[in-house]
Amino acid sequence: MNIKDWAQKHFKKKARIYILPTRMGGYLNGLIFLMFLLSVGYGNNLLLVFTLFLFGFNLLWLIQSHFYLHSFKGLSLTIEDSFAREHALVQIKWENGPEEASSIETSLEMNESSYPIIQGHSSFPLRGLWTFSHLKVVSRMPYGLYRAWIYFPLIDVKAYVYPERLKEVPPLNIKNLQDEGELNAHEKGLHEFWGMGPYQGEELRRISWKHYARLGTLVVKEGERFSSSEIQFRYHPELPDKELELSRLATQMVYCHENEIQFSLDTGTGKKEADRNQYHLKECLRELSKC
Image 1 (cartoon, rainbow, N blue to C red):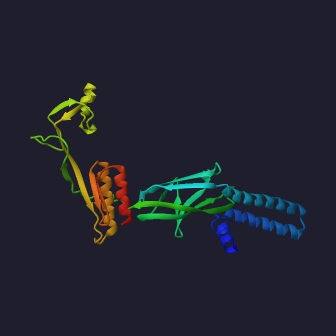
Image 2: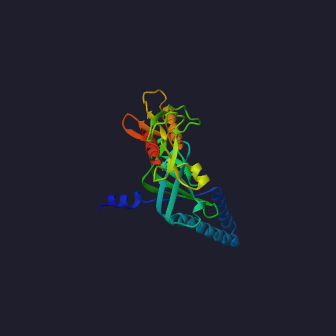
Image 3: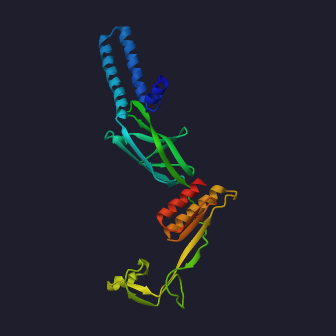
């Protein structure tokens, strides 16, 4: 192994600790230096001893600032998907770290931009698939005299940021579809039935919960006609305001999921078949974030 490879292995990939005095730390260092000049200039041994004593404590605080961050090891970090300009949950776990980990400040670094993590959450301004390079950890321990920080390299830490949600849900074009069950000649609304029968493992939505609450027996609605709703979302990249169109689709999808309305998505490059579960919503929003 040559010197260049050895240097890249031991220095470039190693997290370094940087330390600078805070304003109060600068005042303290200035005071120590002034006391040293006065003690030497006037030959005051008592002042010199006190200056050296204070300098020793200052040096101990400096070393403590270094070792406080040096004790953080075994970083594990995950970022949950979120919408643009909304809080994203950031989970940080240390294999070995001080009990006072709450006293540190953390931020995610990407392309020379910093995104602070406050109470386990961060916020990202734009949609997309974000890849972070470092986690910056800042400490002012002990006593706030020195500001020490370190950059922990992150490997394959990514987060999907969905399009920004609108404050109001745009109008939806809902299509009603026939589901299982017999037709009712006097159809009204989405659910109609003409009789009751004992429960024999049918779908939960066919159970009459009102009868169960009153009689304590599970019965199902016989001859019920089910009408389900479905929406077909299509992304139109040719529209002038691309981000507004993506925000509209994201907002409507969340509304459909919350109201158990099936929806499909066609982005032109891929299609997601109709469904309404949480996983389907997540996959569709991820597709929008990459458009």
